Image (cartoon, rainbow, N blue to C red):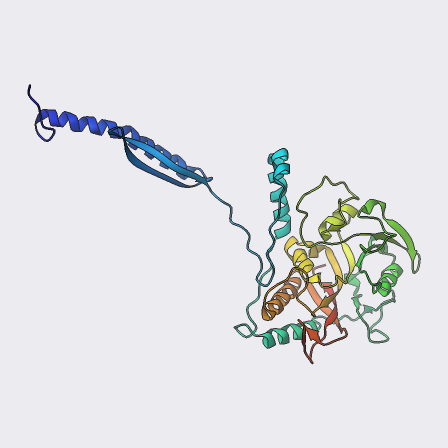
Length: 377
């Protein structure tokens, strides 16, 4: 019997041709997978290889992994938070659960993200950051020819006595008619009494929010307790507080009931049917920085005309972290964000104490009450 060596003669050619024929189908399959994989946005990596099997060559796909969405990074100086979604609820609601989660994320981030400012001295420095923020919050950016002072509903050129806060009473900044006036107050210590008296004298529709008020409605804005105040103004009281995050688990909401005792300002306004809040008073007990950040990122401030808020400097604030100089830079970034939204400082009043981030500072105070006006209206 004649044998032929695979390296010579026509017999060798036939053998090589057979091997090539065996390799062509796997090669075409690999090429097809590569083309399809490059066209699919959900495919991040395809690992392919050739391996010997039973004396032949077989093609194998090792893994195909879906593309992972990048996780939103937290703001420097702020403790990172991750939204928790109940797996059972997600499986039960199917695609709607993912749609709700995406909607919540877009509402939290909003049309703009908080822009962290550069270091005041080009590098971390507690003194430089403190001087910058104190200089900023003690220098009004706008002079008003007429103002509304605490407890008074009649505009005047200047307050009769040193005022805790002021509202700019320029004609173009006040509501066209008092019937359109809406005022919100977030306070748990009764420090908003003069504010309520002023906006009541203007004839505003007033809503007070205090989670410690046992007489107020428990989170159901449509069934709030109404009472007379001042010059006949009606005050609706709500047992509710401000939240800086969009709810992690959305409930089916109807107008007049946001479904909880802690909601974002945007959700509260939507539940009450208010597109605009003309006057807003807030003493949030060190929660103001994160709430301000939410207003900036969610675009809520475009619907707030006048803002009176107390800022606390004794400690970093709720859910704010980092070294002292990082916290100061974060605070300044928030204030710059308010300004970028159209708010201009018209008045500043220093509180008691000289503690800033638990350090005694002679040229600074532990808190300030700041009055802003939105010049974009």
